[in-house]
Amino acid sequence: MNYNKIGRDILQEVGGESNVKELTYCFTRLRFVLKDLKLVDKKKIEQLEGVISVIESGGQLQVVIGSKVEKIYLEIIPMLSLNNEVKKEDNKNESLEVGNIWNRILIAISTIFTPMVPAIAASGLLKGALTVARILASNKGFDITGNQTYTIIMTATDAIFYFMPIILAYTSAKVFKANEFIAMALGGTMCSPAVVALMAGSSSVYMFGLEVTKASYTSSVIPIIIGVLILSYVQKFLEKIIPEVLKIILVPGLSLIIMIPAIFLFFGPIGIYIGNMISFMYAALMGVSPILCGAFVGGMWCVFVIFGAHRALVPIGINDVALYGRQNLLAFAGAANFSQGGAALGVMLKTKNKNLETIAASASISAALCGITEPAIYGCNLRLKKPMIYAVICGALGGAIMGAGGVYGDSFANNGVLTIATYAAFGMKKFMFYLIGIGVAFFGSALLTFLFGFEDIENLEK
Image (cartoon, one colour):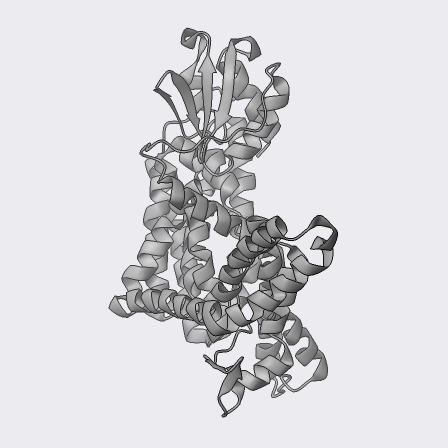
């Protein structure tokens, strides 16, 4: 998406810079206070790439965009002569948005986990390549799992999960405004060899005379996030009461002295229990019906993407890989990704609009090859509405097929052609169900879009 162009086009269709009195944004929409609403061309705004709908409410013109709203807002602000600062409003009970606390939770989760996505994606790509190499070698009678090169590369794919507390300590500290390096020291303590050995031993572990709940914190997710959240409050308290001249030594030192026992005696076990509860609830849903679970995730994943709510589900998949070495959340989400790519392909084949044809072709390749669906969602499927419906239907069918086949992947990898091998790790039967699922999602949505069509855009460009 060209955010600058989208911002420029939106500004033009709301009557230009001179018609804007104020501009703010919230979780999914731009909020314009305009001098004259009669100058607005709603129909043209709704035809713009990335725009979901346009609403008049409370004297504002609200342009609903989705999770990319901040990027477009930041492109529009320099075009205005107003003395605008980056201003984000709280949500006000609109139908497309959830409560303030939920918004903050989603934003926090997104900010904590998003920076590590490239490393996780790289891990998935490497692990998929190793899976292919292992299968090919096995077919020729060789076992490469004992090979030193294989061992080193496999360790690289597992490292981000093993040292998850250190990585999450850094990103969580950024969110909660704690000292990043004190947070990382806390995370490093949790997965240090000495602590790992103590927790794995047969004897009880004590700290200051109190028995420690034995748990493995390597590859854990929730404990360090809770720990850094508490660390941020401890740090703020210490900064208030300690003289300025002593802060550089005493604040970090006392923070660690307070937080290390707090983590191992209290907050760490709570985090482990919460993580186990989340995994248990997802496993319970799978236990009720893997088919329904697959259909729900496969159908609704990209709907969640529109509102950024999919970030709330990401820790489930990461936690499953970290603890159990496998996950199926992104397998089901893969059905959604491929269905968006297929619907975009259908748009490319059906539309008479040359500009839309180009956008749809690029979006289809991006979704199918790399699992990046935003161009397909915002570029064509959602703005044309019917292709989005076809994608949801076929994504649900693909997810249901995967659920029926017991599909799992051995890494947390965004679903696309480049990471298909990730889902071959647990046998060819499960892998075939995965291939059938993404095939139904991709070609089904393409076929429905082509056969049943949509209301085409005659003049995308002015």
